[in-house]
Amino acid sequence: MLGPRLTCLCLCLPLAFACSAGEHHDPYESVLGPPPRPAPEEPSIIVEPGPGVREDGEIVFAVKWFDGTLEQALALAEDQGKLVFVDVGAYWCPPCHELDEKVFTDASVAAWLHEHTIALHVDAEKAEGPEFVERYAVQAYPTLLVLEPSGLEKARIVDFHPSAELIPMLATIAEGGNVLAKLADAVAAKPDDLDARFELGHAYALAAKRELAEAEFERVLAGDPDNAKGLASKVLADRALFFVYKLDKDLDGTIAALEQMQARFPTSKAAVSAYRTIGRAHCKQGRVDQAIEALQKMVATDPTNADAELQASFGWFSFRENCRPEAGLAAVLSGIAIAPENADLRYVEAELQRMLGEPDLALAAIQAAAQLEPDSAYFKRQVRRFEALARGEADPLANH
Image (cartoon, rainbow, N blue to C red; front, side):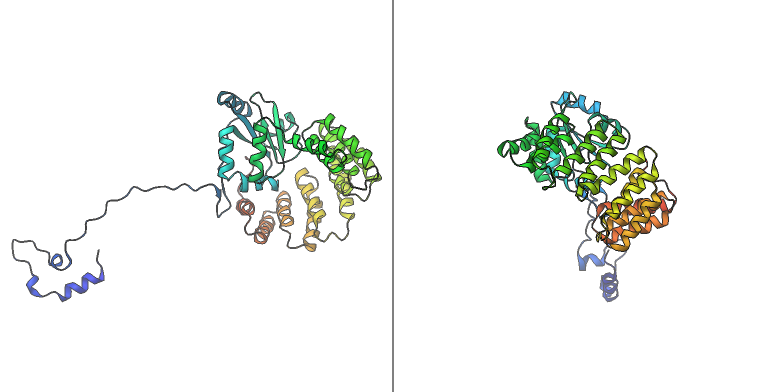
């Protein structure tokens, strides 16, 4: 189609180009040559997005997660001569999102997992998650478990690790090594290094290996009786949290153990963080007033608290434990007054406003969080979620 140029040419052609009767002659062809043939239509190609975080915050994983149960994954691993890799996390867990966005979108991680494992994701609080967490005594999120096809645990890795660190750790596990062995070697090389001994004992505690952890903890307590290195308080806190609370499930025993630690080392960091576990133990037994009192004591330990970290911790406690969200919101709002640029405070405000039936206020809070961290894929997804809630739609996370 030639458009305006052709119109101009028609007006300028002489009469000699007129066609004689019975002969079809296109005057344009003499000037312009034969019209081009239309190009054949090429079949449309749909290009799938590569792994990564999309502009709207959605994640395209490089890892191909197994869509089935643990038992099915174990059976498939047996057939294929592989291990089973299990990512255990929760939607409210920031390091879990960091793994999703930075590690599980990495082609090199996906390639390693595909070659050596059947990869399974478990939400610790949904579907089979609670049963899985209890079965493997998962103590923290994220926990990355490597299992034999029989279901026996080969090793575990706790917390976020970038791809460059994670792949060698997984390779060591797959080849028969154990991540705990590295910590044990460090202790063997420097038996008087109390920090190394605590790290080993803490790792054993995370792995629910109680006797091994206790052996290291006893050595640490003997070497740091007055908490001069800040290790004795950590040992007592670990014992209360991982053994009395999580393994023994003795709530009152947990409270007693932590209060004894607080009395012994009142200015330690462990004494401050213990208030959350004390509050949780009270809340689980229906003693809501005592739970909130514990969190209020926690905030009161640092009246300056310029970054409002303790107020945020109070808010997350109320949200996760569903314990007096109005009290948690009051703490969070006081934290926002101290640190208005804290995106984490704005996010927990959104969750608490949602719990209290204020979807519009919740949306405003999550929008503020997203503005403070515009590159956060997680906040982008949360904005869409809270927009849906403000429209009166069901929570998109309710069935996930």
